[in-house]
Structure formats: structure tokens, C-alpha cells
Length: 87
Image 1 (cartoon, rainbow, N blue to C red):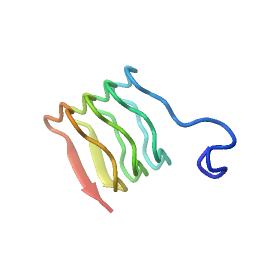
Image 2 (tube, helix red, strand yellow; image 1 turned 45 degrees about the vertical axis):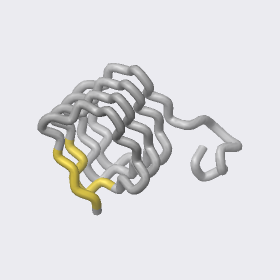
Image 3 (cartoon, one colour; image 1 turned 60 degrees about the vertical axis):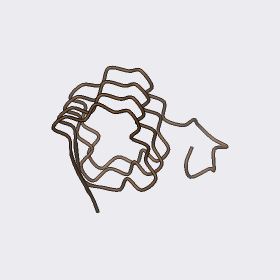
Image 4 (tube, rainbow, N blue to C red; image 1 turned 30 degrees about the vertical axis):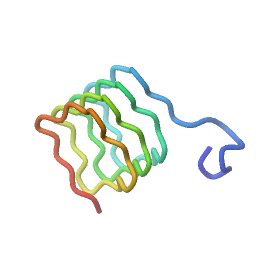
């Protein structure tokens, strides 16, 4: 989807999903929709989540170490214990 400019495939859509403990290490998730998702203890280490939407998601104890997160939206998230550093 990203490489084709939206012509092929579809945007990653995880809105409202329960993805507790999911490992997204190193994945390319640019513009993904995680609105309202439960991402407690999810691992986004070295992932590309640029321009992704995490609005109202639960990110308790989630890890965003060395993550590319420019332009990502974190409005209204529950983030107790979340670790984030951009690369």
C-alpha cells in the first residue's frame, strides 16, 4: 500500500483491536490506524510508525525505543509506563 501510493493493498487498520503484548519490532507501519486499540505492553522497537494514529489507544507499558514516530498522533492515549525514544 505504501509503495504504490495507496493504489495496491490497503492501509493497516487496527482501530479498536486488542493487541496486548503484540511484537511490532522493526515493522513498517506508516499511517497505520491504531485508534482506540489496546496496545498494552506492545513492542514497537525500531518500527516506523510515522503519521500513524494512536488516538485514544491504551499504550500502558508499550515500548517505542528507537522508533520513527514523526507526525504520529497520540491524542488521548493512556500511556502510564510507556517508553519512547525516536531514532
